[in-house]
Amino acid sequence: MKQFFKYVLATIVGLLVFGIIVAIFGTMSIVGMVASGEATKNVSKNSVMVINMNSVVDEQAQPNIISKLTGDDAETIGLDELLSAIKKAKTNDNIKGVYLEGGSISVGLASAQEIRNALEDFRESGKWIVSYADTYSQGSYYLASVADKVMVNPKGAVDIHGMAAQPMFVKDLMKKFGVKMQVIKVGQYKSATEMFTEDKMSIANRQQVEAYIKGIWDNMVESISKSRNVTPEALNLLADSVTAMMPTEALLGAKLVDTLVYADGVKSVIKQLLDIDEKKIDYSRCVDCF
Image 1 (tube, one colour):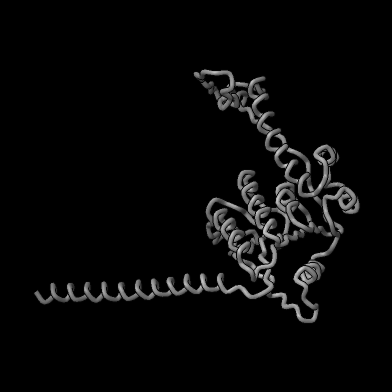
Image 2: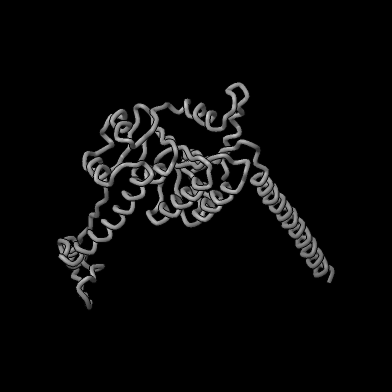
């Protein structure tokens, strides 16, 4: 009987210790969330919202422990989080503008359009947007083109090359292993199984792929054309000429960028927009809202 009570008492003590530990960690988590929320709200005057364009945009942000351990600079930003931050920055009087930093963002086309629309809405509020990168990918330039001032490294590049699709066919590969697909489908534009049954695109599939790619590209060209005051015809010619190989002076002449500047010169540009004396500017005011 004594052994029974001994084990019961040990169990009770263990549960109490476990409960205390859980309560401590729970309290620390709540305090951390509150402190984080307060840090976001208390934005100092003449602040700039910084959006890291060397990042991955997903539907929801997920902490990447491996990237932190390996020292990978790429971070993951949640789409909803980013859109919410831009919306809040629009109405926060202490935030004077947005700085798009870097130029190799990884984001889906639909998400990129949502982000660009949010940035356009921010700019229409009367606040400014500036962008800088050593090299702009096509997706990052699509976002950066909404800025009042697009800056690039004098030895950098802007990559605008258009869009294409490259379907893959594995019919012959499967044949070598004695595998043959038996497909039953109804309708002319049912192309999901073509990679298993054909060795080239059907006419119907080519028509639909060309249609949706052209639609996406035309939408991108129209948006860039409107923001940069460049005709769609001129943008298409630039895409055909492989802008990534063009000298930056030519990019300046084509009105794809506004200023050639090195990274250390960006702060001076922001200083002018904030209308703050060089001796008084506190560069910590360029805050990252994430």
